[in-house]
Image (cartoon, rainbow, N blue to C red; front, side, top):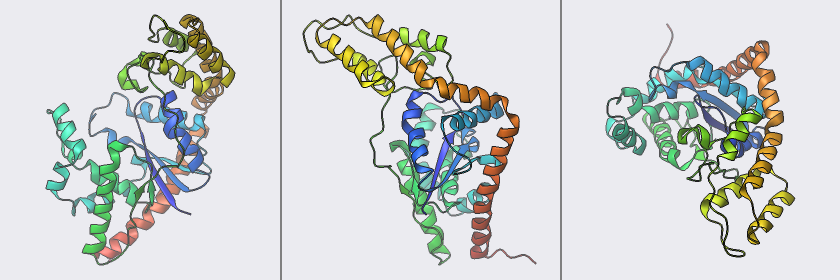
Length: 331
């Protein structure tokens, strides 16, 4: 069975965009591949070296992924900093990573431009840590977005360089993984692009939002004055509302409001009320599961312990073999 490795951001609550994106892929992958999903708390320090409450953030992310359907008995879900072998592989890979190639990384140049007062060594060697995360489990598949493809290419470079330097075909090449199905892209409520926390709290509906919070956000969603011609093309801000509805509402509901729009009879207030009800209904079981898991410290400790043990079993084997290849020996 092929191995899949994917990192999970350790900051920010999950929203509908995440759910219909990465989470849906994870739910499919976990039953077909040997999956390692890690919460990347080390990575978060490159841009936020003094987090206000790192533990709370990690805990919340873990709870929401479990509530969304990740099965810790099937997939390996773990916290990056609990598997300390990654730091040793990171160190060893840094010995064969060159400053020039790291400085040319697009993400590094972007971060330097956006945060000139926080250009730390961890930021420079971020691609090496990412490579270590992947190579640690000798993954062949890595689900990545466009912004991470260069880092994946660098992971292949570091793995191949290790093989070449030590004359050993130990690391396999990891490749970008697309599950093969088109993901539902969820736009933001502000009509300006994709849903995301970085765009503002009112842009996104989070999995743990209460019905009152959902209603407040949806009713503020950006719309226009309405169509002036029969069957006219929907502008982007209106298409966004329909796209969200397509994701959470029955097809008959979408068709109903589509017909109203095409006949210049739509009332956006009515559509938003319906969308509020449908989102609330869709998220209800997930929100209930979040509340259950949040109260169950015994279960959370069990999940973290199981994930750490499974991840370290794989990681320790890799580190032991890498040390032998390099030439480290015990006296």
